[in-house]
Image (cartoon, rainbow, N blue to C red):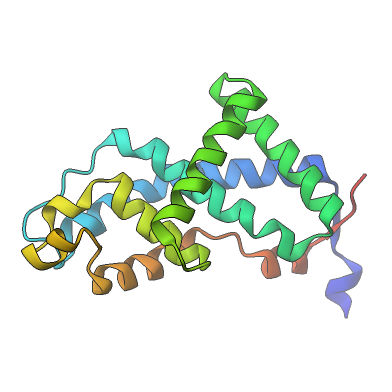
Length: 181
């Protein structure tokens, strides 16, 4: 009860700042862990060549995954405003227009959807997108490589890791009280 009294009020702009900075920080630091996990995974017959070129795809996959969960925690108009502010902030950071960054997100969302079809599980889709965007099929044993599908054991391990990159809205709302304006 006392926790509800001392919650800090936060508006959409401040929330978007926190969200963007957190996503940038976790993807920057977490990318090295992802590379190492993939290199050491027993599902691969040879060491996958994950490079810094994959970092942008990783950021986009994590961002899309997290944006998909906004609607679960906010009213439609609130989620739309927060999403807009997040895209604006990312566009400014990357020196592109709002439309360009929104297109990158849309392309990534479409890619996740296509590799994850017919499943609607976003976490699973994020793991599959990592597999395909990082070109990991070539490093698998013959059976899965021929099927052009990720080893299910690898996907399970990747799901466990990717869950650490999802925003913890329950924890956030324990500390903050959101208001749109």
